[in-house]
Image (cartoon, rainbow, N blue to C red; front, top):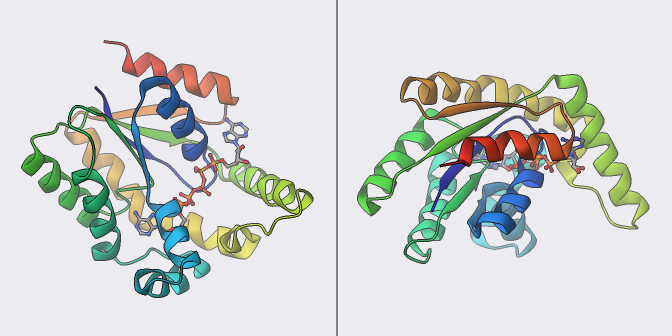
Length: 194
Ligand code: AP5
């Protein structure tokens, strides 16, 4: 069993690597971005609360995402590992996660930080939006260049504080996320070797 947090800016490849890890290690995948988009699509009360922040590239309030993660984590099969993709994003969320895992008597094993230059993020998100359009679907509302800029700023402002936090408790592992998908996957797998 392995329990992971994937930390990194928008477009760094967290979702892409999470998909592979879920397949290879049979993990529960909890993506706060996906959960929020589902809630927005369903127009649930939580979705209505989150919509404006997501559309503007801002962070959704801590208590909303903490509640979502708590619900999913406490529902997991005993003995099943998990990947938290896009959570925590603030020190308050990291504290809430620590308390939750402590109450469940579950350890956090690795926090994988995706290191990547901004230029590549812009290229990857533009390509994703283009591919979505060419498949006849609507790109994510927050994938426009203006909102992406805001999301990158939010990452630098709120989430960057998390690397020293996890470095201090010895959980932080850095990967060079500018490499191709296979190579990034290999770097992560190297950390997961017993
Ligand atoms: P969220 O959905 O988490 O978005 P994000 O973190 O901005 O990340 P993305 O999903 O855009 O990118 P990714 O790193 O997963 O990259 P991907 O694998 O898709 O959050 C959205 C919003 O929800 C936030 O802005 C916020 O409003 C809210 N939110 C979510 N969590 C929150 C929280 N905890 N607290 C508060 N608010 C929260 O890859 C991108 C593209 O690149 C793909 O096309 C992929 O094929 C390609 N690609 C991936 N890896 C590579 C590679 N190595 N080489 C080349 N191409 C690659």
